[in-house]
Length: 585
Image 1 (cartoon, helix red, strand yellow):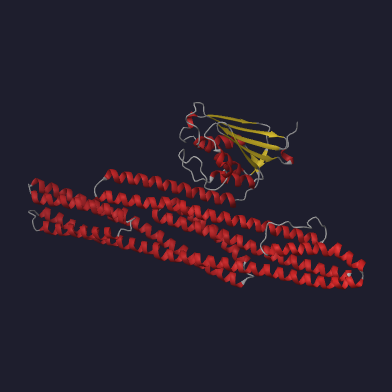
Image 2 (tube, helix red, strand yellow):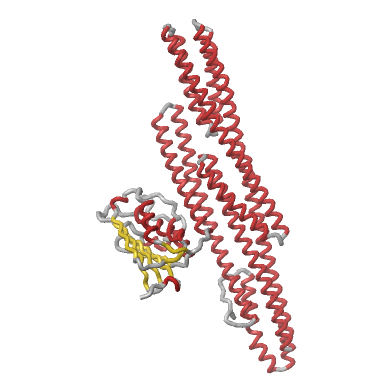
């Protein structure tokens, strides 16, 4: 009977291990889809930014984002091929993403066409018309034809306004401006037709005919500009927006399918454990009838651990991730099952933490990206109104504010991309030259405000031999040193930054100390949280720097400490030294 129970227990354990492996694969798939959702969201944000500002740098980032997404989608396809419904829905979403990419490429081409029309054909025609009008003005002035001279001046002013409006049209959604500009050009053409009837010389007639011909081409070019801009707005605001909604809907459906799949697997595990318990109870009763001594042995040696683990696995399958897994110290199959269950628990906890972090990331980036865009659109509308009123000073102020707002947006997008690289990048260890990294960092930030008033002291123990990931060490030092510069206390006469590195026992310790503004004690528990800024009036930032520093420290297995001082702060990076890096006395 004991043999039967042992065989039955062995079979059950193997079944549980197989089911848990399948559930782990499902969670791996879900983590992959979360990365895809995050990258698609980032791509959509970058596309929106490019549609309004047209920066080439943003287009390069979109290209890199597309390459990353292509790799993630291909990997996801290979991981989901065993589940037909999820795989088919993923293929549909990948197709929709490709269509979105093609539509965005079309919008990029249309933006280039708008730029070529404005900076090429329209600008050339405008220069030609100005030359003709200058000649007509001279001819009318020489013959003292005051009425014709006034008409020429009116035409010149109208064409200047039309040319300025054409620049706005190429980047605006103002339909009223489209119609007003075309109507103003028609009025100019009528003025030229009337002027032709009042000419007194063949030269004047020829110049007016040339001007009329140029205006006809100008009219065609403006209509083409208006048509192209309208098509561009239709593509961005209707077609691409619809495709975005389709992708988001497919993403939600994929999340639901994956969750249903995971739920089914958890239910299968629960049902299997219940069946195993029933079988075990049945054979346990038989064992009791066989002999009291045998039943006691079975109950104490096998039943109790199995029942404890079964109960624990049931809770784990029902979603209770914060529980202790007993039996991990055992060396038998029960111990293997307990270790597998513990690995699954850790994965579930990690998944829950990453989900919460992703939701916070999506909410804050959406808010922080939308704010400067809305401000920029309002400022551009203010600049347009100022230009219509010929208030160049107000228009220039609005443009300057717009540039500042978009610069902040660019800084935020760059920090978000750096954060993505911080989480995804893989790098081999190399020997680190701390002196070089620190000197390069100081040179890079030398143009920051109030840099020259700082006393920067660097002391690196020359006996240190450090092997780590160079990009992570560079990111950590650049953020800590630049923060010390940006958040210095300008009311202090002797501001300083001290950078020290030494080996202490089995660790290499790098310290960045300053006597700046420091971190208020009530906010220190939020020090390494995303989007937290403690001195927003001192310097602009995204609030991601210290979060990336913390993540980079975790990647290189280092400990990051913060020490608040009476004046300023001390950040301490503690890296464990490998056997090869140990210095000899």
